[in-house]
Structures are given as C-alpha cells and as structure tokens.
Amino acid sequence: MARMREFDPEEAIESAMQVFWRGGYGDTTMEDIVAESGVSRYGLYGTFGNKKDLLVAAMRHYEQKMSDLVLSDLRKPDAGRAEIIGHWAAMRKHAEDPDFCNGCLIVNVAAEVAPHDPDIAAEVRQFDKDRTALFAAAIRNGQKAGEIPADVNPEGAGKMLVALSHGGALMIRAGTKPSELEGAIEAGLYFLRRSE
Image (cartoon, rainbow, N blue to C red; front, side, top):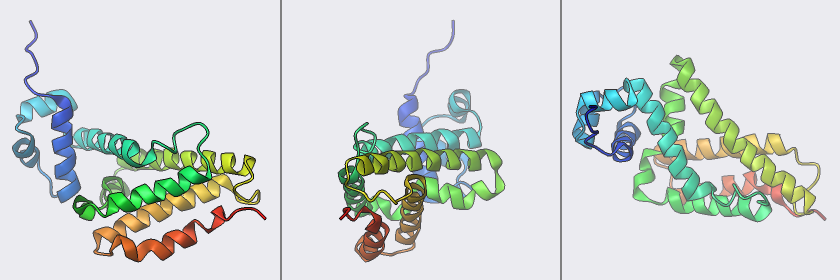
C-alpha cells in the first residue's frame, strides 16, 4: 500500500513561493524551503521534483494568486476599458501592501533565472503572452464599444501594458513608492482616451 502524503501540497508550494519571492532562486536552498514549509526534502522531491521544478510550480502558484487578485475582471468575456482601468487601480492597491517590497515573483525570475535557463524563460514568456492576450481582448472589446480609439493596436498596447507592469514592479522593489509611478501609469493608459 502506498504511503499517505503527510502534508498539504498547496501549503508546501505557498511556502516555497514565499522563500523564492523573498530570497531569489540562486540564494534559496532546499533546506530553506524545508525550514519554511516543514516538509522533508524527500516529500518535496517526491511531490514536486527538483529545485527547478519547485520554482516552476511556485511561479504557477504565484500567477494564479495574482490572477485571482488583480486579473479576475479582465478575464470576463466582455471586459473592456473600465476593466483595464480597474486592473491598474487593483495593482496600485496591491503594490501598497508591505509584502510587495519583494516585487513581482515572475519579474524577479525573469531577471535572475530566465537569461540562463531556456525552460524558465519559456515559462516567463507564456505568462507574458497570457497577460498580453487579456489586455488585447479587453482593448478590442473597448474598440467595438466605441470607448477606445480604433487606431490603437490591441496586441502592441497589450504588450506595452505588460512591460509597464514589469517595469513598475522592478522600480517598487528598488524602493520607488507606488504613488511615484502615477504619472507613468497615466501616460501608459493615455491610449484609453475616449474617441471623439
């Protein structure tokens, strides 16, 4: 008979996510994750695989949490201009949380690990592609509703919003206050001006 798992995988991956988020990938050891999660190395390896596999699982867990936190309205089929604006309001609120001083886990991994690991780079690109698609769909909906100018390129503007989000997260991690980015966000959202 197989041995019953003695820990909750969701709690374990949440702990691993927190360790990677605080300390980065290179400076995090499996011992750090064992200490944070209370799960043995055997249990972690048996459930998630090696350290890199654990990072990928932590990234996906983080992205799901962020999706629930700041992307739920953008995922609505009829999301448009209001939902794009609402997303940035939700991001501002999230960025003011003291824990956000760690920046964005995906952006941190993109800077630290992706340049040296094609598998991790592919994960990061997929996250970026998914977010770009959400923004692009909302822009197209806004254009159909006459709320966003027709000459805006949905895919290009979607990528720009992802880049703005990533850049802002890096700046906040380096000590910039969220309120100091208001002008940059306003400029980035200028394309949402209403059609005349």
